[in-house]
Image (cartoon, rainbow, N blue to C red):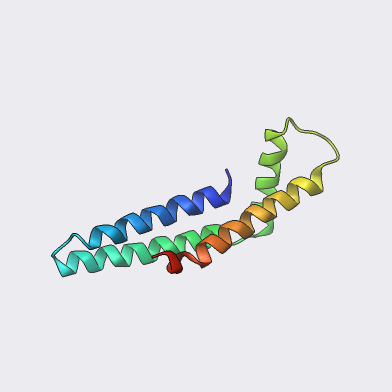
Length: 98
């Protein structure tokens, strides 16, 4: 699955929880929710960090999604790397959105 989608989903949850804190009068509960949003943002950043193994797995998924053509290994590798870079960029700039 595209890493950018996964990261975007985690960050959307963080934004949703952060918005909920504006409706809560209990400071302690609001603080716990804010701590959870910080954890979700850290998790999103960790999910977005590219490493060889995860890039390899994603490149194989892309290859399989394209009916396993031969001779396009680099193309799929670069596409997988790009997805991770986009996800990392999204996660890195998540604080700017909230």
